[in-house]
Amino acid sequence: MLKDAKRVVVKVGTSTLTYSNGKINIRRLKTLCEVLSDLQNSGKQVTLVSSGAIGIGAVKLGLKERPQDTPGRQAAATVGQCELMFMYDKLFGEYGHTVGQLLITRSDIENPERRENLINCFDRLFDYDAIPIINENDSVAVEEIVYGDNDNLSAQVAKLVGADVLIILSDIDGFFSANPAEDENAVLIPVVSRIDDELLHMAGPSVSRLGTGGMATKLGAAKLATEAGIDTFIMNGSNPEDIYRLFDGRQIGTHFKKQ
Ligand code: GLU
Image (tube, rainbow, N blue to C red; front, side):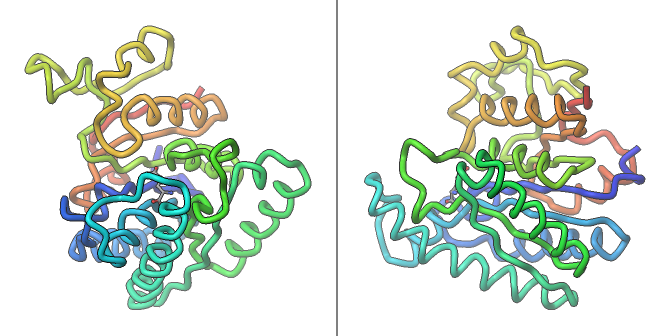
């Protein structure tokens, strides 16, 4: 099924891109860019939704922790976004691929005219065989209008580009019956046919502390995407080569079936 997918959106979070000290995990980033370049070479149209701007910016500015206030986060994002794109440009460039940066705010997607413009831009990037790399425009988005987490943003982008597949790379293996950090009986659920209230409850507040956006936001993203007819996978991003295995039809992470 995945073999035939044409448009693929991959979301990667800060915890996958960086070590716990906040510095870039170069090996992982390199592998991710290599695998995505190869997918693009195989004829797919890859879009990457990448977090990391605020975290990487904070480290580059020598701050001890992520800034808590809005101007601090905005400023860190300006610095980190440059660093991120510098790395992506360099690493994808090594495999002969061109990347384009799109920094999106909620109103760009919700306003019909701006949405249309955005779709046109994506389509042209695909025509040019370039790889769009998306983040929220953290430096200008103010609190009331932000998505806040890139899980939601990745589902919006997947809808926008008419993706066949959304892959959310996380710091856990997929969707579990309970929080695996707290419950040793927690088991990975390989396939979810429908995201109903019971399932949303399972991803409740206790689980949502995991990762950057948490499981609740990932499930919300999966719901949005699957309801738009997009097969969605939540899987561990620690070994990006697992993406090959996913496309080979192996059971990896949790597959949320399109509705
Ligand atoms: N846009 C934020 C950043 O690049 C990340 C949001 C998220 O963690 O989902 O730092």
